[in-house]
Image (cartoon, rainbow, N blue to C red; front, side, top):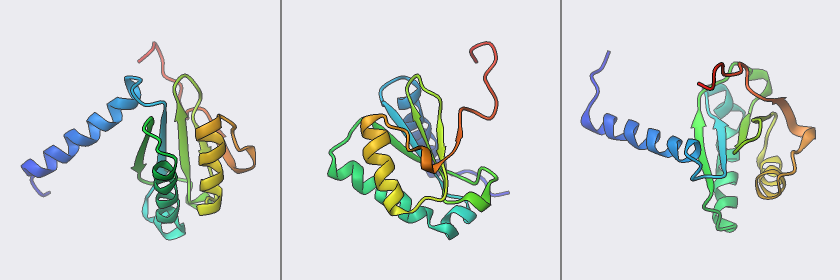
Length: 131
């Protein structure tokens, strides 16, 4: 196993600091595009690019965009999860740039869940004891 470098540690620190912006309430929405190899092969990069373009075009600064690996549902890729402060997460499936644009404009900007594209609502496991 390769040893971590100072640059690796700095990248980890930056990622944790970004994630904390959502947890601490500094960001209204956390948008995660699942970028495992299955997601990338299915077009997740185009979905991510579309979300980033929409953020820039709409001059939005209260949305945290992040990526993750595969969540184990490769047949439903590309996937993205939208988490809003105080609401259950929504996992969207079979995305493409047009669907991503609609999700951004309607769900992220207006709070309107796009039911036609929803795979799941809520967390796989509920947290116990507030932790």
